[in-house]
Structures are given as structure tokens and as C-alpha cells.
Image (cartoon, rainbow, N blue to C red; front, top):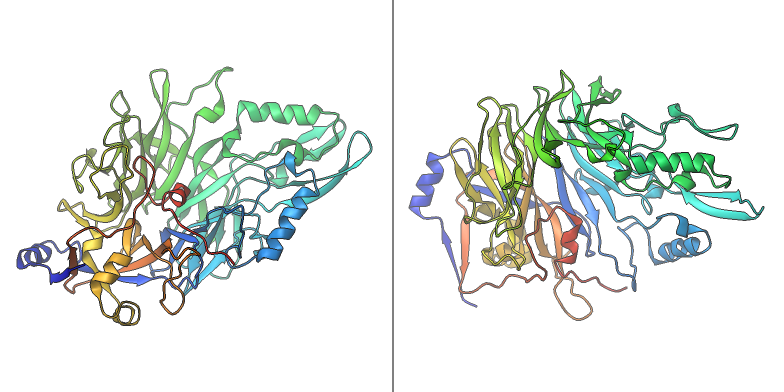
Length: 552
């Protein structure tokens, strides 16, 4: 195929020079993952010093389970499944990990959170980000084997865990602190025996999503759902001798009402949780508390939290983008109101200028969701243009220079087709939108060693589908679709000789060098199957990319 390589035109250069907020180009720095298997690595966070955090996951292949996350080999996996068959494991949802969080300092290392490295096989962990050499996230509790005597005086074995999700905060000395939820199990008794006391802080759920120098923000459980309350009563009154945690088996966040929560930081140590409330909470015996939730996703140095809350639209509960005030512990307002034209909205990022970004979701149509920029000080909201009028788009973060990053549909296809997305950067002060893929620079050694100096080949092999975070240095953490390669830069093919596409984290360094662009006479890009628009930051992407796993 004939390719042409050209630099940006003089008109484009003049535009870049006039609008200095968006850099002329970005140098693409692949994270040293040291992973040569078809695992999927997606970005979740970025520190001010350029450390990328994220999540590693893999597709399930029931016929061939290879070395899991580079930690557990085939023998360990076989032993794991044998242990399930030898117990009453059908009573619980125990399964191998589907995701493990990582940090990159300087190369990738997995993070077990509150568990130990030996528990990586059965816990799911996520690292949401980091600040001041600290990092934070959440993980599930490791499964523990328990043996008990049933009502027929026969010995039984099963598994239990202390909680479904627990936020954590790890300081630069490696000390990890739990972020307890506002509500955990109450005191639970069976007959004359106390099985769980409230101060044990079992159960409940919490998630750490962002942090400032003074607070960690996320969300946590505040009440039982109606179904969970009934389950506690049933397990407490039951004549069965199953351990209470086995009986309850809470394995989902839906058993709780969750509210946006902050944990104050004092000398680097997190304190007690403070719930930030819900917009328009209802009361009444017939209302299920789990139907009324709020979530905190980002916080600025002014103590303003961006997130989402239940909003009562007549008799309909909808989720709307919301800002909260840490000083009062309450929601300030809904950024967008819902009506027949808007289903829901969510705010993912906020900067110290009180600029909030996120997305608004619409009823099923050609365009399902669009990103917004909301100015809290002026109480104004805008929906910037992207690649084309009906493109779906989401804004994930904004820095203190008012640069917004996210992902937007790049291909203009019918609603029944899966649309590829590209990472974007948007200058909110000047109203300029840019595809980051068109502004990439590649490390000279990468070009020489892997692509024989062919910039076009490099650009085709690294497609940025979403930008998740941007710091005040202008660095961007993004997730790219690329081909699986070994440590020597050679492509790793599957057993049928097909190229394997994987998600990989990259760090983008702002540069004043002129970007180079490639134009092909036809599209050589990889294909996807499936319908509807999609983003790269959910695990659902693994089923869409058609990724193949290599047999051992």
C-alpha cells in the first residue's frame, strides 16, 4: 500500500502557535509493562510526577488457562479449580481474579491493596490514581476456607470473605490503610451467641476514586438494601450452623445504599468517613434504600467534589451529574436536570478553577451521550463539538490549565455498528478540540528498533482510543490499542498466525516539536464486531476487540 508522510501545514502551525494551551505534539512513551501475554492493561490514573496507574485484566478462556497475570502458572490454576470441586463452593461466587491494579514506577508492578501478593489469584484490585507519592484504589477481600458441622452433624467446607469491596490508601513507606465505609455490618447474633460486632468492621463496601492533599474521595455503603436487611434477619434466625458470612454471601454492591464519601487526611493518615448525602432522598417503609445513591469521582483543592446522585424527576429516580461541598457534607446542586430528552449524566473530573467535566446520556438515538464542560462559578454548561455532530463522547479529566481529555467516536457509522473511538484533548478556554492521534511523536529508538524508522507504521500500530487523565505538567495518561509484541519488538502471533491486539497504557509528554501525520489511500485498521458505541474503560471492550490468546 502506498503511504505518504507529511508535516503539518503552515496554516496548522500558525493555529498551534496562536493557541498555546494545546501542545504542538505529544511524545508517546509506552509504559514498561514487561508483559508479553495478551493481557489487557487500561489506564485509571496519573500522578503529578508522571506515574501511570491502571488495571490489568484478561479474557476468560475455559479451554486453556495460561499463566495468570504472570503470577500463577497452569499447575496453580488446576489446583485452584480442584479445590472448588472438593468443597460446597456452589454456595458462593468464588472465582479467579478478573482484574489486578498496577502502578508503573518505573515498570509495572501489581498491587494487592489490603490483601497480600499471595492473594492475587482470588482478589480483584484496582488502583484509581496517586498523589504526593501515595496511591489509592479498592479491592475485594481474599477468600478464606472454612470448615463447619452442619445440622446433620456432617463436616462441610466452604469459602467466605470479609467484604465485597474496600477502599485503600498506601503511603510512600508502603503502609496501606483501609478506608472503612460509613456503614458496615451491625452486631449480628444467633441465639445467645454474638457472631459479628459492629467494631469488627466487616461487610460494607467502599471505593477510593480520587484525592487531594486533604481528602480521599469516593463512595461507600451507608445502609442495607431491603433485601440485605431481610437476609441478615434470615441468617440470624436460621437453625443452620453455616458461618454467618457464608450464609450472607454478599457479593455485590447492590445490597447497600452507597453515598459519595470523603476520608480526611491528617499527616498522611486517612480518618473516619464523611458521607456527602443524596439529592432528594425519600423516606418511607416502602422505599428501598439501595435505590437512592450518590458517588464521588473527583475532588479539587477547594473541597468541591464532582460525581453523581439520585435525582427525583417526579416519581422517577434518575442519576444526574452532581457537585458536593466537603465543608457542609452535602450536595450543592445537580449540574444537569433530567427530562424526556436526558436520561442521566455524570461528572468525572473537576479542577481548581471549579471547571467540571463529564457526560450526559440521552434516550436511544444515533448519539447516545456527549461530553460537557460546566463552570460552577458562572453556572454555565457547554457541549463542545467533537469529530462530527452525532459522535458519542465522554470527558474524563481536566487540569488546572483547563485542558480536558476523554474519548469520542471517530468513525461515522450507523447506530448498529461499533464505532471506533479516539482520545481527544479540548482547550476549554479557547474552544479548540484536537485528536491526540494526529499529534503524536515517537521515540527515535522505538522507531529504529521496532518500525525501521517508519513513522507511518508506528502510528498505525498505536491507536489511542481514550485519554483518562491529565496532570498540571500537561502529561496525559491514555490507553492505546496496539499489537502484542515480545521484548525484542517482534509481533507475537496466535496459533493460527493472526496478529493479536491488546490494550496498553501510554504516557504522553507535551512537546513543541512539529507532529508528523500519515495518510493512507485506504483504511488498514483492525476490525471489530458487535453493535453500538463503546468506550475502552469498561471490561466489555475485551469481548469486542476479538483478541486471541496464545496457547502454552
